[in-house]
Structure formats: structure tokens, C-alpha cells
Picture 1 (cartoon, rainbow, N blue to C red):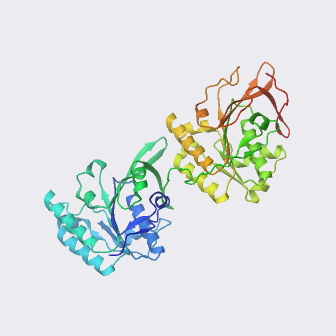
Picture 2 (cartoon, rainbow, N blue to C red):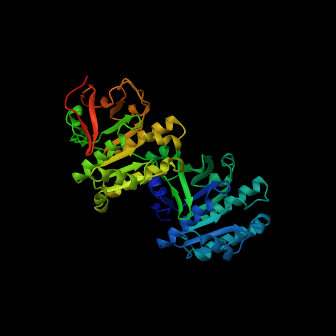
Picture 3 (cartoon, rainbow, N blue to C red):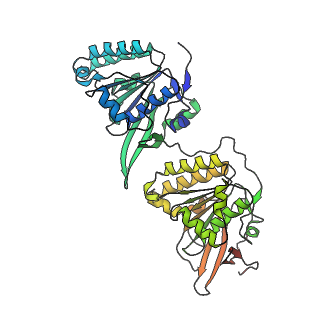
Length: 458
């Protein structure tokens, strides 16, 4: 037998988590009906064919090859070139020994590099437990004779895995589940076991659940956002682009800092973020704007009224927008889109508008903090300067507000509208790693953006 090798499984995100599948090996893909086991298997076979592998699909079914192909052809990724040899499900349940011989003959004639049997659980259905175990040991021996990657699709509850002989014979178990979250189905994947992966990563991989999505384009798994392994923070400062603000941070923010701008509606938080991004663009620093409330077009129009030509920077490839409805996104999916854009454009500045909107997609406050912590840690590891905004209730005493996300951010700036004086004030309540002015300063929203008074008010 050749040495173990890592090969692509063909599922977006899954290779990122695992580093590829180990071949030869036998992987059980288990779950109840409707969780995407078959789509996942077909996508792995289709991509294997595109990479030059010989792939074999053995569905245990009552449907014809023509009907299976007709349904599968509606999937964008489907590749018709892999071999399909269906086995009648009724026959498989009534006469498993004949079925075992038939499977062996099919494998011997095709000699595949990658095999899927879908589902494997009806095999040996009529046997008592002892005979069923003997049957699957024989099937396992047959599969081991071939130097191939095998996926066995199992219609199993998670509670049934422990007592299933198929689980014990498999090198890895991928379990899929489906739940409800607001208006969307919530799909999660977990690795019950996975032999052959990096021992240093095994505990992390097998102890976590990963969100995944299924649509006509295929099966996508969303890895958790992780910091760069060789993180080296650049101890330099960058200008915020807000005249007068940098002096409150001893000359600007550290390049890797995350700044939270908090205030009630109407205090100019969004304008702060856009001006921060604009200053970076004017210095050839690619930026990204993440928004839930306003469309990119609306933000571009708002900026145009201030004389800021964001369309130019979009055309030049320096600016991108990610706009999502928070009630319709997976947090992990959202994070993946952000990460892909950042790495594709080598982003230097991020404006994340409205962390409070995350409550519509993440119901648990601790999970929101976990999301923001992962996000800010990832941005810091890439030495990206980021500005987040959040809504807070109006206060007559700026600087004493209780802000949940403040503990996660490197710096916090609170904006305040004074009804009594019809003026706007700000104060820095936190600045990690540097001294900052705790005094309250007045600022104004002008026709060209936000500006601060140079004198201290308090």
C-alpha cells in the first residue's frame, strides 16, 4: 500500500479545516434525512472527477439511473463523468450477501480512486446484530483491499453512532444536523472522529461544530475565523482622518487597533467610519465597509454630498462593501465573506457599521461577544486598523455608559448630543497600550465631514 496522502475533498471550507482528506481511508457521513448527506457526497465525487480521479457512486435506491441523473443535474456543480451503479434497495435489505458480492464486482471492474455508497445503513437490515457485524466486517475488508477514499453515507441519529458497527470500522465520522434559527434552517457539521489529521489540531477540530449551507451551487462549510499563526504586530501609528482626534490618542491609533465609536442615533457614527475609510483610501490603503442598515449605493450617495468620491476607489479596486440583512445571515458565513474579501484585496482598514445589528442573527449575548472577539483578533493579527460603531442610549454624562463590546475593543470613543446646548461632544474612555485624553471635546458635523475643536471643554 502507498503512503497516506492528503487530497482535496472538494467541499469549500472543509479542506481549510482539515487540510484535506486522508487517502486511503473510510469516512462515515451520517445524519438524518434532509441534512445534505447526498449533496455533500455528489459534490466530492464531482470535484474528484474534475481533478482527474476515477469516481464511483453506488446509490442504494429504488430509482433508475436516468431519474437520479435528472435530479442531480439540477445541481450547478454536478459532473456527469463519474460512474453510477445503483443497487436496488429492496434487494439490499432482503439479500445482503448477494448485494455484498455485487458491490465487490462493481468495485473490481471500475477500480475507483474515490467511492461513495449512499446510504450504507440498509445493508444487512434483515440480519440479527451478530450477523450484521460480520457482514460489515466483510464489507470493510473488501474496501481495505483498494487504495481509495471511501465515503459511507449513513441514515443515523447521533445517539445511534456509538452502537453502530459502521462507526467503529470508519476512520472518520462527519455528522450533519439541521435545526431552526429564526427564519432560516441552521445546519451544523461536527467531526465525531477523524484519524490521520494533525495531532495538534485534532482536539480543536473534533471539539467544535461548524455551520454549513446547502444551495444549488453546492455544499459550503464555514471555518471559524482564526488569527494568523505568525502574528507580528506593527508598532506604528495611523491617522484616523478626523481632524483633532489623533491628538486624543497621542498621535493616532496603533496600526493594529480596533476602535469602537459608540453613541445614540444622530451623533455621526456612520460619518466617522466613512471619513476613517476615506483617509485610508487617499493614502492608497484598501478599505472595506461592512453594513447592515444602509445599502452601498446609499452610503456612496451620502459620501458624494460631502465631496467624497467613493465610486472612484471602487473602480480602482481599493474599496469594497459587504451589505447583509442581519436576520438572514449565518454569522460564520458573514465572517467568511469578510475574511475572503480582506485577503483578496489586502485590506488595511475596516469599517464595521452597527455591531448592535448582530442581535438579529445571534440571539445570545455571549455569542455576539465571541463573534466580535474572533473578528477583532483576526483583524489585529493582520495589522488591520478597524473602526466599529454601536448604538447606545442617550446619556447626560458622556463617558460613563455601560457598553458591552467595550471590553473587546482596543479603544472606545463615546459620542454625545447635548440637548441643552444643541452641541455635540466626545470623549475617549479607553485606549489600550497608550495614554489618552479623558477630557470631553466638542465636535461638529460640517459640509466636509467631522471636525473637532482644538480647545478642551472640560
